[in-house]
Length: 415
Image 1 (spheres, one colour):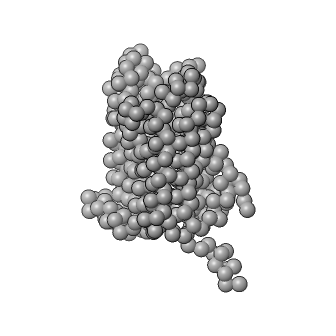
Image 2: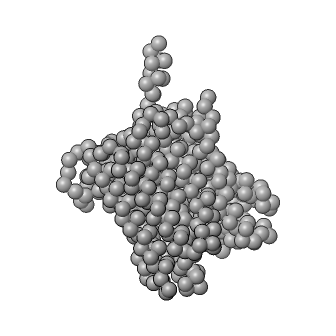
Image 3: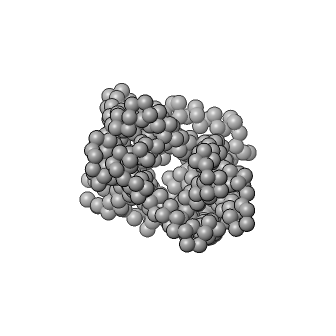
């Protein structure tokens, strides 16, 4: 059985290879901007509330444009939309670099450009998720999504650190300038991808077309259940807002806080490197449920132990479990969704996955404030395990989901 990440999609699909390279480069630049924006807002205002308001300004466009962008992705050429939104993102990064170079940078521009950057990220992510299944065979999709997770988790793990180093040595303008450069590279690479016209010709994205996607979701419990189980895991089992208090509880300082933030991504990155076996799993619904349960167990143990190394190890295990869950959730959604609806479903998927952690921050903060850090973390992990058990017992469409047999497996059955 293959152990290390399966690179077959990169070898057999030229367009997938170009999509992967372009997005890997541009996403790394985006993680640098993700670190630079809050830093600049705080150092201009000396207010944590101002930083929080930046998150509020970014959340609305992220949710809205996930859905709207999905509708457009189904109605226009996906490659053309990807090029357009990448060009807009490049313009936003260039504007941030220009603003940072001013003697007195404009605070209002940070909020406006932060919101615009969030909107472009929502549209581009939706296009990427809807385009990927069209570029690889169904049996290779788990490997393709695992490869996406490789650069995603690496970027989230390393990008903010690189951004901090750039800001410290060269200043904020350099951090945004690197993002500009990565978008330039992505534009060149994306331009070589073959056109991906809509499966069904249509005039444009309308409210009716968006509602069509929602009607499809209502009739497919297996997709809705993958959304639901992830929301529960993120709302109850992602104690990100408790990490400052957890660092104090473990008698650590800012360094430990930073490690707590990066440990989940580090675990997911390592899991993506050894994800070659995922392509062989046919009972993908069960795999999702087991991964969510493993996530919950790891989070609960992290809340119980008092040794920093063990806490970091458990959070890394949780990140690994979440990466595996994400691979199969994406593969199930891609398998069930028809080509003409991929953009709209991917948009809803992104909105759900982006909103869950934000609600989770609120839930963890409220419970932690009322009942204590340990109770909030442990109870959240236990809730994830219970949720996985309930879904296994009550949502049989997910628990019994089996991916279609590959061509090789069908040939073996006939022989």
